Image (cartoon, rainbow, N blue to C red; front, top):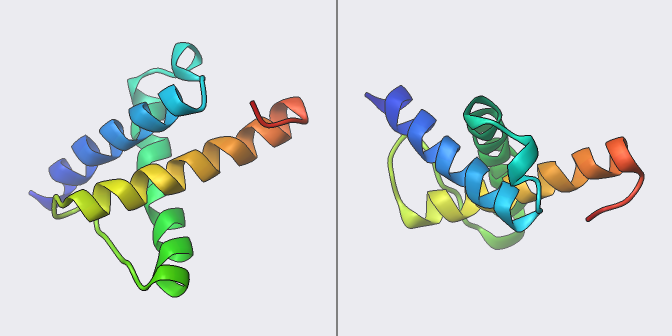
Length: 88
């Protein structure tokens, strides 16, 4: 059951991050899920030591969703730098 929740929360986090970074038109649902799940890992790496916050996408919580969105935004920013040489 945790994997299903992780996919749903990862998809929502990736979708919200793609809207914030203005990449929604170029990403499908699969890439939203991938970006959201990887973003959750990145968010936990960033938010854990700096803020003392950790969240998991396997159990739904607003903190976990926020951490996943933060990490997904960071991931999309890095992808923009690599692809276009600038952050949108």
